Image 1 (cartoon, rainbow, N blue to C red):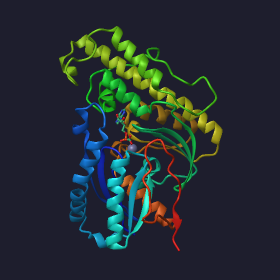
Image 2 (image 1 turned 45 degrees about the vertical axis):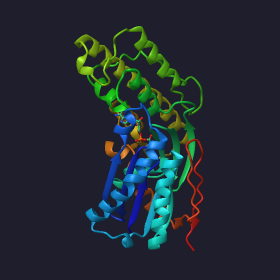
Image 3 (image 1 turned 45 degrees about the horizontal axis):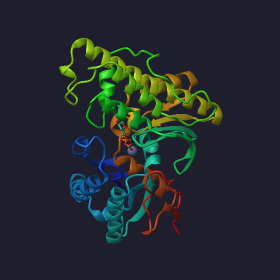
Image 4 (image 1 turned 30 degrees about the vertical axis):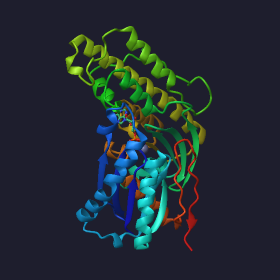
Length: 354
Ligand code: KG4
Ligand code: ZN
């Protein structure tokens, strides 16, 4: 079975081909440079860019893989949650391709695709606890199988990646700044008392990161001249300023990682009997988060599944893989597949193949 994956839910345009043995080829185009000028993703620009780039990437993917459009058995497309206009570009393209080639259509939950992504390279033992930490979401899910997820907890305000990006913006790093904050933070030891572990003194599995962002903003405002005056120019800072800023970054990352750790540990107590822990999404690329989760899994004697950093951020290989797993269960969508915007639950509305 050859499955094409299409990803256009936010600001990355991606296409990938997978077969039963794994990834065949992929192409990814980032719009980060366009949106960084505005300090965040501009939805109208994002969908215009997807429209411009997607057909070119698809043609290039076919050329590189030596496949023709008619070889594709299944077209898997990220159908949400995401930016509505952006999702519609990918979904329309997918439907058109299915009409032209008779391929079957599968609409993929972008969040599930993140958590299933590492399965491209190693088997995920189910049931598994999934922690998804991305720019738009922070979800703890019980994954019973590739098509049976139960949401256990979520952020009540900012997502973990959003917290990193807002903190990075305050420090005048380019958008999305999580990666820059991570890199600078590696130059220093964290101060565990610099920032609070918010919303942990309760008995639930939800998260809140907006207070942490405020604490960071207050810290930066108190220290005049701490951040570079030109965006991203950390090299222009005096050595002691740079060291202080690095310590702020390391301490912020530790506060996020500790918070994720506390709730993930609690979720493991609640669900009991899971065979693995999957940590995925853009923030799973963060070195402090990776370290914290590695320690937790070791303490718990659990198999930790951590995708390599390129599989953590948005890509089409994860969509193709999730679509392949869904198709293998005989579950598909019709051409009436709908996009699901951010903030709405993606329904498991596949139809079983007759
Ligand atoms: O999963 P993703 O690519 O896109 C969404 O679906 O949101 O995640 C993007 C998020 C951004 O907030 C970005 O700053 C964050 O992941 N991110 C990181 C790192 N790499 C990406 N945050 C902290 N440390 C990193 N190394
Ligand atoms: Zn994502």
